[in-house]
Amino acid sequence: MVPRHVAAVLTGLLVASGIGLLAGAFGDDRFWLRTLVFAACTVGPAYGLGWLLFVSGTVDPGPVTHPEESVEHDWWHRSAAGAFLDLLSVAGLGAAALAVTGLEVAATTVLMALLVLGFADVAVRFTVLSRRDA
Amino acid sequence: MRNDLAERRATRGWSQGRLAEELGVSRQTVISLEKGRFDPSLPLAFRIAALFDCRIEDVFSPDDAAG
Image 1 (tube, each protein chain N blue to C red):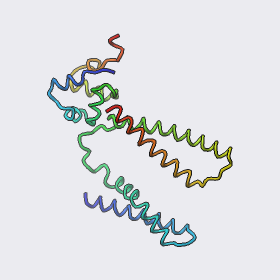
Image 2 (tube, rainbow over the protein chains, first blue to last red):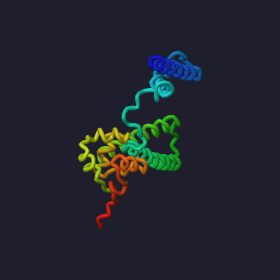
Image 3 (tube, chains in turn green, brown):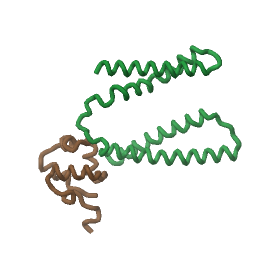
Image 4 (cartoon, chains in turn yellow, brown):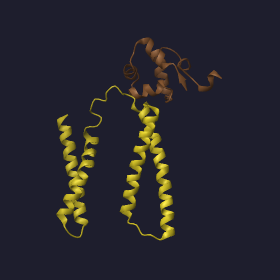
């Protein structure tokens, strides 16, 4: 099991370093600063990727052998479906508002806002469902 | 959908955790099932029926079955 964790950590470091170097290469100045900041910000998710590749599935699954039939799976599906419709509505209304007002908004800002909204929407819906049904 | 899962479980002297383990689902799933707030999938309903050695309709009944 230890080699798998080591492989996950190495994968995280490699992927984060790669993303950092890419960000540094595409920047106009402060190559190492951009590289370090991007690498530091992505090392967590990159380690998650390594964990998925090397560790996930090898740990003891525990007593839940049919997680897809658990109520938590149902809550997740309902939350994700609801959040998806919310995102479509917000994106549509936002696009209409921007078209009418002529406002210019950076694509990174819009994408980040949609991402945060999606995460928050799913989290709130899941929490409400679990409190209501529990 | 209503069910008598809690009664059948109590008859065997099982905890909710034990039943969850037997069915391969989370304990929360058993809690929600017993409260009638979660309708099981068909495979899970079959496993429940097999576990208690009965038919699915012996355990579960539609809400409007009583009229």
